Image (cartoon, rainbow, N blue to C red; front, top):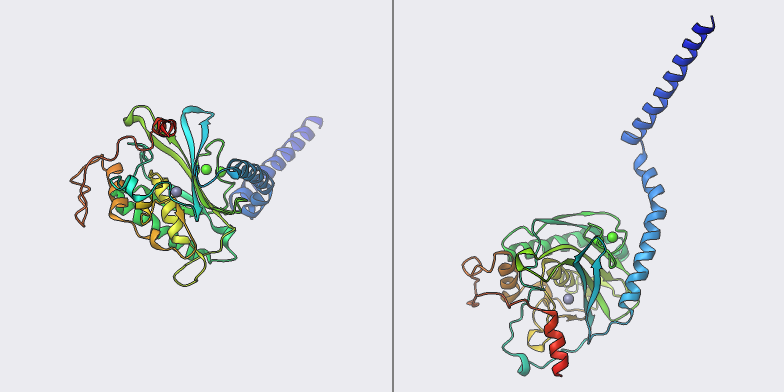
Length: 323
Ligand SMILES: [Ca+2]
Ligand SMILES: [Ca+2]
Ligand SMILES: [Zn+2]
């Protein structure tokens, strides 16, 4: 009798356990678990986001238009991977007059050979600008810009994007996600910042970009400046920032003020939307191994090797010392 009772009880318990496990699996698979997950994940996301934003603000707090490039340090998991922040300023002045630098081309890779090794994707978070712009407009602009740079590079550098919440741009360690978001940057002169991680020195063949995040400052009113005078043109600034994501450096001399990669912009400026022949040439040479045949552009632009190790950091120090 006791033995039979035990078997019966054990069967009940087993059935119960199977039932609980099955219902849990079912809930995870098809239940309203999307919302549940989002709710449980939310506190962590917000926490990380605050932490991230604090680091961003601290790092950008002291930056000025005369020093628009920041070194972020090395990634903790690989010290050969270094981070940099390219800052786009409003109303900054060129560093040198055209006479001083008239022979310098208005295109420059961050470092010779430093590019993506395969197609890459973005996480686009338009929530920070939702009050001003429909998500569809933000997406359409972003897609235009991805297409324009892919066409310039003559290969698919940017294969697409997903829309979703970002946990914040990364300035301490890359997190494996290329995030584009709209956040309030306390420094009111900063329009946008591109954070880029990769190997930019050492053997040229070993150089590569591994991650890039973009922060757009919500202190500005974003829009389509053709239709909404007084706004900061979304597509123009996307074009500039995505140029960094592709591997191009800022330009600081006044002979390059028309180029997309010039480091300064202002409200109503839309010319950065259009890539100049030099912008295209630089992107092409970076992704086509400097091939003059592949990169023979319309408009009679001469072709050749990209500037050697452009932004070599020692050059800047030498320059400052000579000053
Ligand atoms: Ca992140
Ligand atoms: Ca990231
Ligand atoms: Zn820039």
